[in-house]
Length: 66
Image 1 (cartoon, helix red, strand yellow):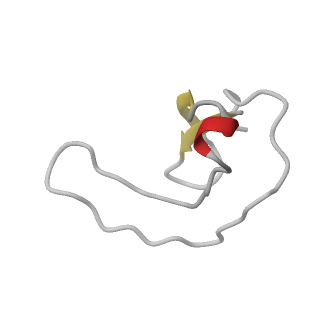
Image 2 (cartoon, rainbow, N blue to C red):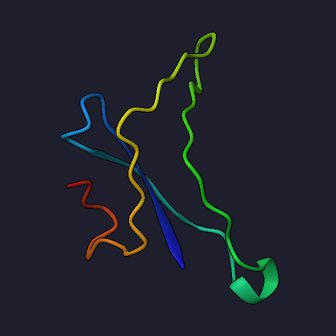
């Protein structure tokens, strides 16, 4: 029931950013997931996704970016 955000500049080393929950599934329904990029400060950013991969399994430790 937890989600983790990780960030990488090179696609090899991933840094843990945030761990959070979206509440009880009974209250919120199933989660819809996707990929995102953001620039919380400044004037924004341009992002290109390359070699995008989704794995339906979760890591043993959500704080470990691999």
